[in-house]
Image (tube, rainbow, N blue to C red; front, side, top):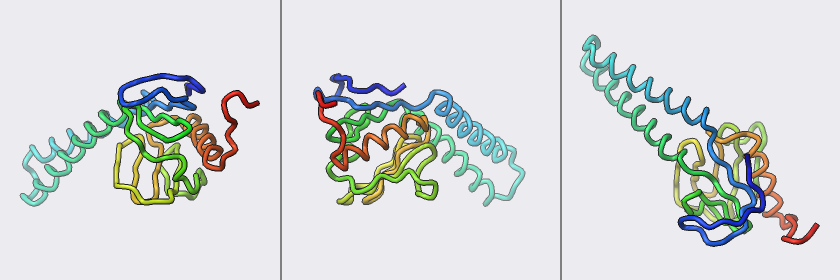
Length: 175
């Protein structure tokens, strides 16, 4: 469930009004991890059987390693959450994805190049590439949020972010 208008202090964060915090769904997280681990195990077992040609063994071994590494990356990335405050969208550990003042557009459309159950943000200035599987990706002026996150919660976050970027989000005490 999203938490609205709650003040908190955690590692790397100052006291700030948290408008919404979205955590990865446990079901999506574990199904994704299990699928990647099963794929890695299957590719390894085929490679270990020694049947295919040596070039295929190399390909299967690399695929197995990649799937197992992706399972670990998904597990470690989805251990945190995304937090939206009036100033920025950050991870639960305090890493800033982008500042709200830098947002040009928030796109939740069906044809937007966005993660599953998520939204796409276009920024004014380019930022360094960053990827946390299941949470977000950032490349240049585009940030895709979603993946293992709940569609309803990311929809609410996108609406909050749109209102903040357009300056129509009410100030505390305003009704």
